Amino acid sequence: MKKIIFIVYCILILGLLTWVEYKTLPLLKSDFSFEKLATAVTASPLQYSVTDPSQATSMYRGNAARWGRVDISSQDEFLPFSLKWQVKNLNNGIHRASKSSPAVDDEGFYVADDTGFVRAYDWQGQLKWQFVSAVATRGLHSTPLVDKDSIYFGDYAGFIYCLNKHDGSIRWITKAGMTIGSSPLLHDGVLYVGVELNGPDGFLLALNAKNGAWLWNSNLIGNHPHSSPALDDSNNLIFMGSNTGFLQAFDLKNGKHFWDFASKDDIKCSPLVMNESVYFSSWDGFIYSVKAKSGKLNWKTALDGGSMSCPSISRDGKTVAITGAKQNFVLDADTGKIQWISNIENIANRAQSSPLILSYEKKETVVFLCENQGLCFYDLQSGKLQQMIKLTGTFSSSPVYHKGHLFLATSGADGLLVLTQESN
Image (cartoon, rainbow, N blue to C red; front, side, top):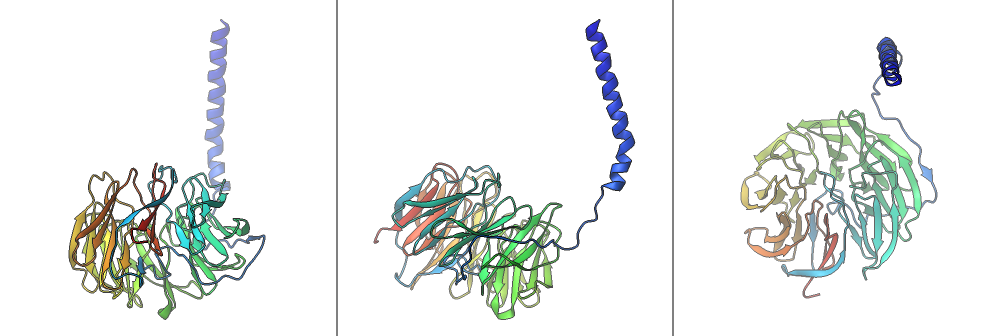
């Protein structure tokens, strides 16, 4: 009898709660609905110490124009690489997004991963310091930017950090949005980065790199900017893609919208700027070239499916390399005509990594993902395979080169691989 009474009591309480919810829902809708903001809200940084920013010593994709290339004057042509160091278990691999790439300079190398850590190592491979963003449960995908004294990056909780490069202590920190997957750009003491908001929405933000003060932010763009901004210094423009499918151009000095170009799907990676043209890929399955001043189309070329890859360009500006869904492509930069294609073997999902061009004095080599667990080096012009390195895990970051060493952040047991050329 007591059980029956208890069951009836529970039913009555549940019915009462349902009735109350039904009666109060219209009130909640009218009293607690908020108008969507037209612009981002400016935040104030928390400052601990400051130092004057200098020219970046390491930046995502090599420079502010995001060329995805390194010019090497110490060698005539490619020499094979071999493993020198390894930092195991770097990324946990749970996110379907491109991982952070290493930052490297003469003092050492700096690695952010999707467990929320940033770690600094010296050139003997010894850990110097580590910093953890405990608030970002989804970790770090923004590639750190390094100058002579500081390291800058964003996390997946929407914070932007500036740390002392030498000991990992915080210089300044600011809460910019909900998420930051974009990698920062530094130019004339100003830091530029894409910020993601709930909604989805987002904007391009310019900060004083010395103290984190907000200088300007663009209007809200309508979807997430996971893409990293790229600079056209000659035209005072900065370009950024987003999940809207638009590549947008902004005035470098005030963030005013200048033009936009519509692809048909998300633009995930950074555009590339060279010779008055902007190159970028889209999930719609095309790589595009548009005019930097106007956004008018130069050409578009179909890949093998939606691309998450950033393009790379040769030293003379005549050849572009990019990874598609499951193939690698090398194209004529003026016409978009495909020069050669290589397959990515044994890959189940869309590739996420971007190529790197090693531009030696006489020849150029392009570094591609060529298997689900394989790194390949090809002659850029002929497509001839020069070396293949087998991995035990996958990678979705970009390879980074510095003084005879190649750095690759992977997911799984490989962790961070530091390769060196056999002649060194």
